[in-house]
Structure formats: structure tokens, C-alpha cells
Image (tube, rainbow over all chains, first blue to last red; front, top):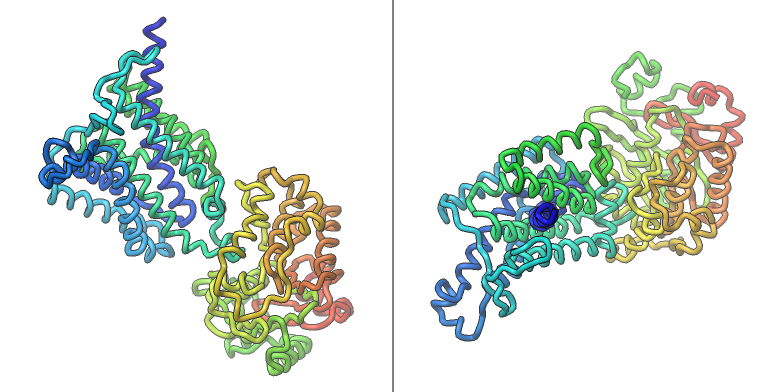
Length: 318
Length: 290
């Protein structure tokens, strides 16, 4: 009995971490799809950018080698490359998102969806190949912080029911949900969020009310990109990093998430991400070879029996 | 829509080719002449549309259409399904499509044809579109608050043209539609059709509106709800807001309107007082089926 309980607790904890990644990816994809009616297949590439930026920042700010070490800055007590990455990665993602919106997405807003798919998928491939050429196609070990806020987090902590669990992963889960929570509040409690919510349903009606929603587009796009990059950093802390992760670990799961949650719904992206995360974690810890099959089967069943998702409506941008 | 010549009258067909309004009836000729005279007077009208041609893709929908709306009146635009009523409102509102390729839309004499949808709205033209289009995922109060957001976010635009009718406060809107106060914290998607229509009108009233355009506000509503909405429209008109109302239900519209236009095949075929239209059996039977 205790074994079963501890297994369930462990599944939930791991599911939370994986689910947080899916939710972060799904929120960005769903608000961009909803407000701009823009299908962004390069969304996974932003995850890739986040993971590699995290990797680089993490390495260059480490205490024993890298940029900071070589320039002697470590003597002023800057430690915890992961904290630096947590600040820098979303900023890089935000900047890349702004550029992407301005130069790739914006010219394609009024084009057919197939054109949007082609151009963003092309961009995803270009970014992936660029990473391969510049950094290399080899696989990097996941990055795990040893200290956070000066506290040693490399030792596992003993949790009730779960047993030993890496303490830094608890902290990462905490960070992820703090970001998800802030995003949720921004969408639910601010005028900007109200406009985004309205825009996900009927952006023309928002404009008919006299609201310049186009100005919000670049901000929405950049925020979505920052969240995806942040998800990449979280992902890089638990999984190996290679140029393919943008597609396999990010783009496809992000679409699954909004299928489950409902296109255009932030609440749905959070719920959908967590549901998928827990399913994946449960299968991985029990019948891991069936994990992917069960995951896709679940999404297929959702499409058949509840095509509008948990929180969405069948139509987007009507 | 009008790509099939067999569906049109011979007169209209020939006129469309020549690029002039149809003159299928004497009333149509009068209507066109009256509009030209009105247009010649210039900026006297709150709104004027002059010789507008609008397209959906390759389909030529509005053909050399002209009409005007005077300050303080209720003006009705009547016509059958597919006659071009909604296209006319969308052309005024700056919504695209349609693509307005020729002609000009003026608000208080100033051309607004090429302005964006949000600019036209900020300049004082509110459209309550067909199907209400309230935001179903937001509460009634949030739907109404969006109009405040619009005002807070609009800065430079709208200065060129003075705003004679500042928007109502939420409190004032609730006085017009007490039902909305009761439903304030309810999601708009859970409202009845009539309540959604009230909400759609209410949020337009919260905007700084000189001209309120209503697209088939009675469509799909139960008779007693139609009465409520009709009363509200009259109250709004009494407060001095100019209204352009589009209807398929000609009888309902003629009850509230001071003046009416009849549109057919994308061109005006009648212009005159509501009484004139009531007396003009030929036009009514031919273009409105009543």
C-alpha cells in the first residue's frame, strides 16, 4: 500500500514538472493562435532557443570554468548559473519573439494558413540546422543547478510518500508554477489580458470596439515566445539537449496540449499541459514503452469525443 | 452574389455595366438624384457615403452606392437577404473585407474611407454587428469594460473630429438595460439571445458614439424581447444618438425609423421618409416582399 502511494506521489510530482513545460508551451501557442489566428510551427524552435541559451548561460556562469570564471567575476560571489539562466532565457526568448513577429509572422497574418505553416516550419528547420552548425549536433547532458540562492540543492530531499527527490527539481517546479501563475493573473486580471481573451474569440470585434489589438500582437507574440524559451530551460534541466528537441519535445506536445485544453484558452493550456504531463509520467514509470502510444491515443480520443477541448470552443477566431 | 445575370432585372444589369445606379423604377431615379443633390451640399450630414463600390474578392457587391444619415435621426436601410446591407455597414465601419475600391465615406465631411476599423470606431461610429458577437468567454461586466479599455488606449486618433456624444458610464448603461446589472458577473455566453443583444448595444453605448449602426437587431428574438430592444433603441434615439438601422424585417424598422433607404443588388432603389415607403406599395412588394 505504501509502495503504491509513493508511486502515485512520485508520478504526480514528475507529472507536474513535465506538465509545467507543456503548459508553458501551450499558453504561448494558444494565445498566438487565438488572437492572431496564426499557426506558429516555429513555436518549438523557441523552446530550442531557450534550452541552448540556458545551456550556454549555465556553462559560462559556472564557478569552475566558462566566461565568468575566466574573467574572474566569480570572486564577487556570483554563483548559481541556473539563476542567471532563469533571468536571461526569457529575455532572449522575448527578443527573438519580437523579431519573429515583426519579420516572419506579421507579413503572413492575412495569408492562408498553409502559407503560415510553410513559412514557420521553414523557420523552425533553419533554426534547428543553425544550432547544429554553430553548436554541433551532439547531445548535452541536462543541466542541474547545484546551488540556488546560495543554498546547496544538489542533495535529494526526503519527501513524505515520494521518498528521495532531487531538491533542485522541486525548486524548478516552483519557478515554473510561479511563472504560470503570473501569466494566468496577467491574462485574468489586467486590461491587457482582457483584450487578449476577447481577441482569442473574435479579434475583429475587438477592433470594432476601437481597440488597437495589432499593437498588442507583438507583445503577445513576444510573451508567448518568452514562455516557450522558459519551458526550454526547464526542459533542459531534466532532459538531454540536442537540436531535435524543438520538434519532438516541444512543438508536438504543445499542439497536443492545446488540443486537450481547447484552442484559444489559457486555462485550457494549463489544464491540458498538466493532464498530459501526468499521463506521460504515469506511463513512463509503469509501462514506459507504451508511454507515447497512450499519450497520442488519449489525444485522439479527445479529438473524437470532445473536439472543443476541456475549456475551448470548436471554432477559433470566429 | 450577383454573378448570375438571370437573377437580376435587365435594367439593373445594364446599369451595373455602365457603372450607374439602377433606374429600374422612378423611385430609384429620384433616390439617386436626391443623393447627388445631398452629396453636393457637402458636409451637412453626419455621415455620407458617396458612389461607393465594394467587392468581396471578385464579387462586385456595392454598386455606386450613395446614402447619407442626418444628425439625430433614425435611418433605416432595408432590403432582402444578400442585398448588400451588411456590406454597407462594414464598408462604413472600415471592416475588411469588403474591399472598397471606389467612392468615399465621410463622417462630418471628413473622409474616413481608408481609416482602420479601430480608428473609425474611435472617431465615433459604433457597429452592433449581426449575431451580436459578444465575447462569450467574458462576463457581462468584462464585455462592458472593454469599451473603457478602448477609450483608455486610444490616444491621438479621434482628435480631428469632435466627439459630440461621449459614451455612457456602466451605471447609465445598466439603467437602460436593468437586466444586464442582474447578469453582470455571468459569462456572456450563458445569456439568452435577447440579453446578448442588449449587451451588444450596451457596449456600443459605452463608446463615444455619434453614430450607432445596428445590423438586424431583432433577428432571432422572441416578440416580447423585440419590444424591449425596440424601446431601448427609441430611448437611445431620444438621448440624441443618431442611429442607422439595418433590417430585413421592414415593418419593424419602419416603426422606429424617420427615414428609410431600400437597397437591392447593392444599389439604393428607394430613399425617403418612412411614411413614403409605407405608401409606396410597388417598392415594398418588389424589394421587400411586404
